[in-house]
Structures are given as structure tokens and as C-alpha cells.
Image (cartoon, rainbow, N blue to C red; front, side, top):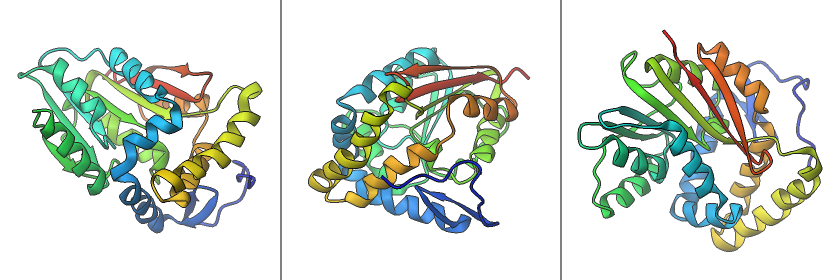
Length: 256
């Protein structure tokens, strides 16, 4: 396994991480888009294989913590194939408003088609989480599942998510995180051997799944992300480790 750059590794001005590579900031969104254009049609199948179905349990926990009620307005960012948006819409009911958004139109089309096939029509938007096209204080809940680590400026994205929340609204961030240390060697072996192999065999795309494994290692750990959420203006920030830290759900409330 290639050693990931540490947080103390110098980065050239105007550069950011794409997996373990350092790339110009302006190139990251395009490179991430290429990954998700490639994997969109097999995304859910690969998620089930990669996590042995655990991602469904993690999402169910997130849905429960969101506690969406009838009439609420909810924004699902990087919503991909629409799992969370579908569940939120059922809870928000006909008086609610649930938006499914993604920066990647291939992923959004898959989500739209799955929702339509299930008899559900939701408002959709292709948009960048760092520049959300919604007014201040509009949503009761904002969620992002397995998308924050792919964003170039996570601090800007978190600030935007906070901006569009109503006072009393909650942000929920479900993301891969730092696994418990005793499990790290086995998890690393699985991530850098099994995941690319699955990507090659199932999605015919080994490189994209190697990037996904690398991007997890470059994502802030649990405590660092909690601090970033506080810096974005959120209070009552807490996180829940899921499956020994393979994933974590962070949540915070905008109080004013």
C-alpha cells in the first residue's frame, strides 16, 4: 500500500488531495466526476459488496437520528441514488419538501430513475455543495452521506450546509472514518486488495475503487471533522462510530 501523505506533508499552493495524489484544486472536481460517472450504474451493487450490506444499516441509523417529521424541508447533498431522500420524503409526507442533489449528473439520473420507478417524484438539482443554490435558513435538515470526503473545500461546504439550515435545524454527515486501531491492518489489506479487485470484476473499473479507498484515508478523522463542524457554526456537535469506526455519523445543530 502506498503511504498516504500525513497532515504535516507540505502541499503546493493551490493544490489538494485526490486520493494519495496531489492535484491542482481546479482539477479535483473533474477527476471526482470521472470516478462517479464511471461507477454510477453499478454504485449500489458495489456498495453492498464492499460493505457486506452494512451501508444500509448505517443509513438506517442516520435516518433515525434525523427524526424527520411531517412538513419538514430536507436537503440531501451528494444524494446519489436517492436512498436517504426516499426515506426522508416518506417521513416528511405530502406537506414536506425533500430535495435530492448531487454534483454528478450521472449519479443524479440514477437516483431520479429509481425514485420514479418507486412512484416518487422529488425536486432535483445538480449543484456544488460549496455553492448551494438555496436561501439562508431554508431547511430543517441537511444530510450528506459518503460525499463530504470528495469535496475540495470541506470547510466551505460545511459552512454552506450550515447557512441553509433554519435555527434549530440539524446537519447529519455520514462518512467513512478512522477504524479502531486493532482492526486497521486487516482493514487496510481489504481496502487496497479486495476493493480494487471487486471494482475490476464487477464494475470493470479498478482505478476508481482504488481512489475511493485512498480518499477514505485522506478524510479527516472523527474529532477533526467534529471541530470543523463547530468552526462552521454548528453547536451540539457529536458523532457516533459505526462498525468500529469504519463509518461515523456526525451531527450538529444550528442554534441561531
